[in-house]
Image 1 (cartoon, one colour):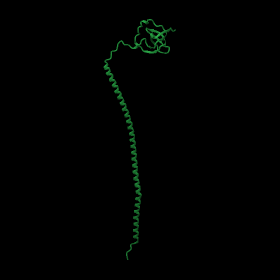
Image 2 (tube, helix red, strand yellow):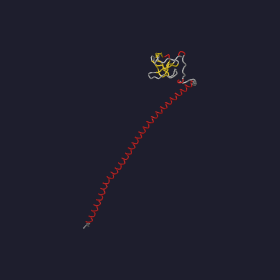
Image 3 (cartoon, rainbow, N blue to C red):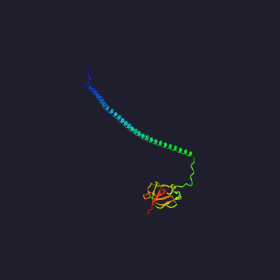
Image 4 (cartoon, rainbow, N blue to C red):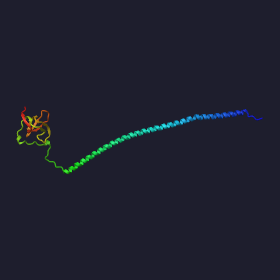
Length: 206
């Protein structure tokens, strides 16, 4: 008769096999569950790192664009300053040429003539002596200008001209000085002197 294995040993072996199978199945399932989470976490970390790098690259691009704008503005200012400098140099060169030309012309013309000590300004011109034909003072009154002439501030052609009168103009004479008539205007013109030859007596005024 063959010796039979006790039944309780078979139960133990079957129980051990089931336990080993359960442990292996549990390990496999845990590994499967852990694997996707680990990959997802790694991918999420990589995505976060890539996003951070993209933000840094974008910030650098903005800084580069700002620097380019500043560089363009600086270039324009430098060009404007260069244009002004060129204009100033041209103006200076033109002034130097004119000065050299004036110096050469002065050298060719010789030293300037000494001023005449007897020369006086128009305001200090002495009153001319009456002409031989005008010794008598002119009679005050209304006169008519017989030719267009100038009115002088003093009884001298070297004095300043204050106005001009046309032929046929009627003027009022208040006095005389040699060959000059002292006239006053009724139209607001400044007083002055005209030559006796340029006017003709009309009537005596009250």
